[in-house]
Structure formats: structure tokens, C-alpha cells
Amino acid sequence: MLTPLGFSLLRQLADGEFHSGEDLAAKVGLTRARVSQVLKDAGTAGLALERVKGRGYRLLEAPDFLDAKKVRADLDALSAAKGIEFPGSVEVVDQIESTSSELMRRAQRRDVHGVALAAEWQSAGRGRRGRAWTAIAGGSLTFSLGWKFEQGAGFLAGLSLAVGVAVVRALEAEGFKDVALKWPNDLIHRHLKVGGILIELNGDALGPTTTVIGVGLNVRIPAAARKDIPVPVTDLASIAGRRAPPIDRNHLLAALLAEFAAVLEQYSNEGFAPFAAEWQHRHAYQGKPVRLLLPDGATVTGKVAGVDASGALVLADGPRRARFLSGEITMRRA
Image (cartoon, rainbow, N blue to C red; front, side, top):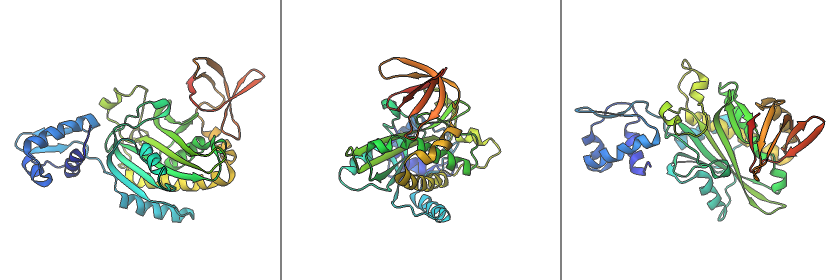
């Protein structure tokens, strides 16, 4: 696992040039032996590190590390263009257990409305059903956003779908075409997973409710790292193509947060209904046969008729219609 010391060294190597072990040791206050040991852990984070005797170390693909000031500057400019104001703060950390877990802990003590927390590396990042979320330092975008609603949990049943719409809108505006949604909270491209959304709630049944919206996006995932991911995945770099300019993760995070602010404000006033038609248009399985795996182990098949105004999935089996709330249900192609 990457440690703060590891990130200190990686930031020294972020220019893509060779740095001797002696110079690195002097800059971070370690012995050369300790530098060597710490940098060995870079491979566990999916980073390709080259070591050449007599020249030192360098990163073969130096990441553009996240910078809260850069994100905030772009966020303010994008928000002004949309005629909105982002209500909170932007924080970036090198390493954390989970951005969502941290915001949920903070919510017990203080208001986290509008607080965006991004991390280069999560030691316990997670998706739905407690599954681990694999991220690459410098190659993923993992962040969480706190948002307060005056309504209760029932009103927020379609929130993950509306957030999915926000993500795809932002990606499309940044040039990433044909990213689709998969009910209830996956982002896919040609049936390969590129990201996911996780919503956590804290509040009374009738409101108000504090939500923590967690997002994970694959930006640049090395082929070697993909072998350790249990589902077929792709990344934004592959979607953009080889001739596309390098992806600026700071700008991308700002674009996502600006779109979130607009969508969440509208959701707080109108619920999911205004987003239903767009969500269905962007759903990769709209009108197609699917198989649902239910929490009790049962399986339901049918054709996707769409989603209702609450965000429930509607399956058609001949003339019959059945609706399903997300919960712990998993969708598969039939």
C-alpha cells in the first residue's frame, strides 16, 4: 500500500525524469535503502517505475497529481459559466481509507454540504454490496461529495440515477463520447465498465438527509492492473483514443463537480422525474432483455421498459410489468 512517504517520492518523480536515489533520499529525509524499499511499493499502486543503475529512478508514465487549487480555479470558472455557485470546498489527499467513509464520519459532527474530497489512493475504496473498488494512483479519479437534502430517503430513491446523468453529461462535454449508464449505478462503454457511483444516506425518514455521493472513474488503467479487476473494464484514455490530448484530471474533476451542483440543486427541487427521460435515453439496456439477480438468490428476466418517476426499474414480461428498486439487485445481459 502506498504511504505518505511513498507519495512524497512519487511527487519528486512526477516530472518523468531520472532522479538518483541519493538526491531523493536527501529531499525527503530518508536513507537510500529506505527510498528503494518505499519505491518498490509503487508497483502495488499500478505505477510503472523504471530503475537504471547509475541514473536512478523515473516513472514511465508520470501521473498528473491532483491539486485542490487547480480544481477549485477550474470549478469556479465552470460554475460561473453555468450561472451557479458551488457551495462548498474542495480537498485533495494522497492516501485515505475511503473518501465516502471519511465524509460520513465528518457528517456525524458537522455539516458536509458541498464538501468534495478526492484521493489519489484509497486503501479501502468500495462499490455496491461492499465490493472493493480498484483504483490506480494517478490513473483513477475517486472522490466523494457531501450534499444535504431537506427530504427523506424515499425522495432520494432515484438520486444515483440522476448522478449518473450528471457524470455522463460532464464526460460528454469533455469529449468522451458514447459512455452509457447501466441500472442502477454503473458507467459503461461498449459493455465495459468505466466507472461507478455509490450513494450513502444519513438522516431521518422524513428528512433532512445528508448524502455522500461516491464516484470512481477509470482514467488510465494499465493492462497489467486490469488483470486483477474481477469485471471487464475500460478507461477514459481508451475511449478518447490515442490521438487525443492527455487527460487533465484536475479539470475533469472540476467539470464533474460543476455538473453535480447543477443537477443536485434541480433534484432537490423536483426529484428524479425531470431526469427520467434522459436517463432512459442513455441506458445501455433500454428495451433489451436482461436478467436480475435478487438478494435472496432468485432470478428475474424481462425486457427493460424503462424507469419510473422514482427511479425504479420497470421490466416487461409480455403484458406484465414489474418494478424493482436498486437495493442489492444486480443486472446482467440476458
